[in-house]
Every structure is written in C-alpha cells, then in structure tokens.
Length: 192
Image (cartoon, rainbow, N blue to C red):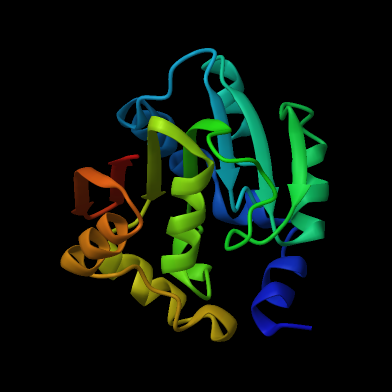
C-alpha cells in the first residue's frame, strides 16, 4: 500500500479527537464565513477525511458530497450522516460530470495530492462557471511545512509558494480572488 494512504488509513479512527480539539474547532468556525458558502449550494468536500467540515457545511445549508481516497476516513465521515453522498476517489480523477458543483472545498488536503496541477484541473472541470475553489488550512504555509516535516509519510507535502499557487490556479482556468497566508490561517479562494 502507498505509505501516504496508509498514514491516513491508520489514523482515521482518532483523527478528529487528536487534530480538532475545542480551540481548533473554534478557529475553524471563525474561518468558515470567509469561504462564502451559501445555503442551497452544492459542495464537493475534497479530502474530507473523517468529515470534519460536514456538520458546519450542513448548518450553512449546503448540499455536500464528501470525497476522500481513504476508506477508513470515509467510514468515519459516514457516521455523521450529514453528506448527500460519500465517495472514495482520487482528487486527480474525480468521478463527476462537468459543472456539477458550486464550490469545491479542499480543507487540510491540498499538499497531499501527487499532482496538484491535475487536481486543480479536475476541480475546475467539476465546478460550474462562476463557482469557487477554496483551499484552506488552519496553519500558514510555513507552519504546515514544519508540521508535516515531523510525520515521515507526509514530510514532503507542502503548499506551493504564493506565486506558484497563483500560476497553478491560473493554469487550471481559475481567477485567484484572494490568497491569505498568515499565522494560523491559509486561504486560497479562486473563481472558475
């Protein structure tokens, strides 16, 4: 098995408990309004993991499809019963028709894709014209790099530098709306 997938598979059961204590969840709740997800919109939660975002997106009135490559992570997400669908697939080959979603959210997942360029092209393909892509983390780019460096299987998984991210998204057909990279927060929001 791929070491990266094994890393997530073996941590699925206690991922939320370990990674999202009350203080972290409070920071996430404060961050969500910046993503501008509207009620009634169809959202693809790419790299959903154990479905950390599902309760929050459901409370905002979004219809969410949760997608991850890790089956054990999706089992945890399914327990929440707040997604319209749970799909095991690779972000670089999404099993959806073009223009299927208003938003693609990639929370705490983008650095883990083998080909971020291909993933971004797939995100653009499944978004409706005018739809938004949200790449977000509760750490800055540098904080995330330092955090991943302590975990062997994901040690090299980093976010692109600002100009590289702009080029990557533009090349996939997006217009970058904002890029925030500050302590405790990373957000790249782009429009198809």
